[in-house]
Image (tube, rainbow over all chains, first blue to last red):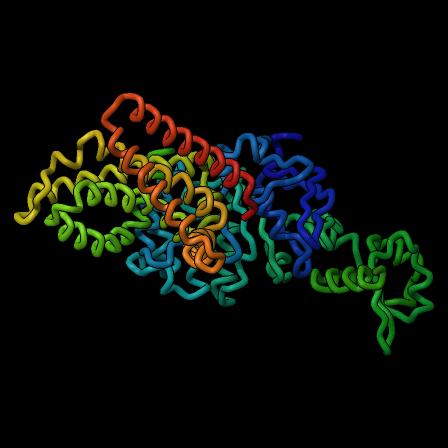
Length: 291
Length: 224
């Protein structure tokens, strides 16, 4: 375990009734954006809750900037900006009052930063939290998370309730945050295009396990979608096939070694660079097939 | 951090205090009644202390517990703040009642009555034990837990009134009530003596101490 990583998870387990997060391990180096993707109920939110110590892990180790997230929870949380999937604040209180009450907990809290962000996000500070739309609530949670010079931003589905214009703006802002060296971001999302736009590392969670966790460029450079008929796909090295889908018009396979697929198939098959949604669909198809 | 936690509770739940207006209206009336004695001050301490239980319930109602638990503060400190605030609020309510007793022209009670050792002990016992019972429930089960707690008390009370009659044990119930009444009156009368004072202080302190540790245990193990 090293302080060069913003986040390190090693062998993390958590069991709920009917669900088990099993031996989850992945790292996020400092200064990078990590994206968590996976179908509903795969364990993304549970992983984030475990990192934030909102849920107790049953096994494994979680370190944030080299510090244990449980033993050093106060130091760890003071360096994290957190946006929950459904932001819950005090409905009958104004945003300004929230700033006064909650900002005081952070040693590096800045009212000026919060006010500037609230202005940029169009948040009226005299409005009560309950009067905000879902998107505005997320913007408020973001403004809170970004106002204490957090070294690591952790966001659970932050773009879900946002309109496309603000979503794009947010992603640009996240990239800009990284200009400040050493800051890191981990966020979960269903919107794979968001990850393709900004994430440096992609971690795919499936049925409580990590299906893969790797740099985005490695994924897009090394992996490929192979299209052809069943006979063509049968010539692929089975070790590299990560998922398949059969249609009336042909078949598709997701392979983790594009170069070897090209060598094996030559021009007889169409080999394309994968999109993240295709990776998810094909890997999910494989999982459904396996079960 | 403890100071921030208390400040946060006061800032974000300030509106709750308006809910005490009906009680203060009743207290203004009760201060003019000779028979109420120390009950106005004691009920003030109780109501003030229980405000913190309603703060826990509000947090749960607004689904704000996760936001709180993600702040850079130990859950233990947040629980500590609640118990400390209960004490402060109970004491503040007692002072307010004393102030009202001094100011209201129709008050038959003096301000000093609220600070008599017997009144203080009774207030501390009633408020302390109530908080000790309710706080772990509010922290672990939130607003539904508090409602459930009172619902169970209601059902138990109704059962206590109805069942002995149905089972032909009315005399047993009457005997129990009289024994409880005698016990309470006897305890209250003895509060001027050092032994019962020490016993009362010890019991209330132990109840709050145990309740605090149960609350911390529950809060630290709660998955949000």
